[in-house]
Image (cartoon, rainbow, N blue to C red; front, side):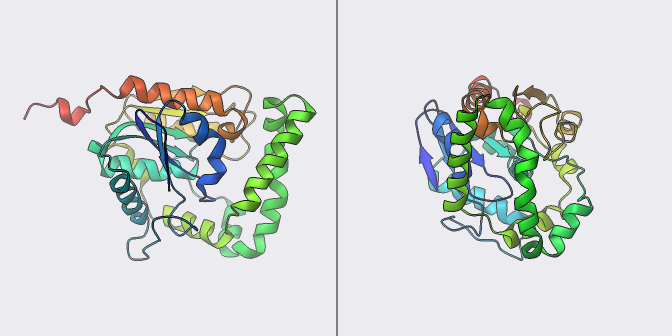
Length: 269
């Protein structure tokens, strides 16, 4: 568990790979202006929780409950990265009074269904992992080269990113399990119960080759009064390639909404 900084408490939820350390630069940048609370997903080394097979996807709700209790906070600004956005949506729907604002970053559609490539991965995660790892640089390089125009910047970024991956490796079987758990949830129904002011952050349409921008923006049609924000010159990993811009968007959203009462609080008793 990571808990650092002062100010509005912001909880960051990592993506499908599960390790909060992959967000290290964004976490550190955000912590200069806010109190940042995060943890690796349940089941990962160092996480405060594990997956309860009987609870299914609600294991993530239990994990966030435990995270907030450990941090001694009862109301936070919640930010989910990619797959973590699904966890954030589900939690914001189940615990509306605990969320002052919600940020979804390059999160797959609430109606998402796994394409053939992902289905093959789910069937044999260990076997498919080398192929997934080998093709990832091809998907990510266009946005890295756009965000970091000089070769020196790209080499430095690549070395730092690879070092982080080696130190905090993702586990294919746990990633596959998380995807299967998500398929049990009606995220569209969850969206209709979200009360918190919501922003949907994406990169540029032609640069995100992991989660299509149009897929993420489907939340604008199902979460009341949500808004779209674009991080220019990046795609899916803007938290890594443009952490300062990302941190400002999340921090500003938290600052603007901290005094806004939820729709439930505004209804007279």
